Length: 177
Image (cartoon, rainbow, N blue to C red; front, side, top):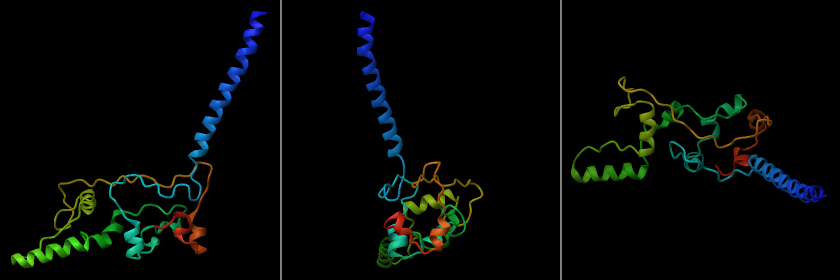
């Protein structure tokens, strides 16, 4: 009789705890899904503080210049450092910093020094480039470790190709990049 009374009190408590744990686990799992728009603004720390606002926005570089894989493969992909070097072999710092060095050099009557921003120095170091932008055989290349931003669940199959080929803008899904 006492056992039946204790059992009748324990069973609802165990069921309630089980239900709460199940709902919490389900909420955590569903909360990790990346549906269109729910990861806008997510910007983990990256090895280089790359600015889509500057490159695609102000400089109007087409997304497909860097992410050419979006046209030809399932994933848009992260561009190889060699794509960055197409421009950054010549552009080594922000225009304001270069201009300030030019002005200072003119005042001091000397040749301007080459200015390299810290972000681009990270790129050059990863590629083992020396001050003359030549590969330093004494150093080893070290690929940049980018943090994935758009991470879909395993059961989702997404292919950029049909969207790009249909003329859907990158901004439609990825926000103002």
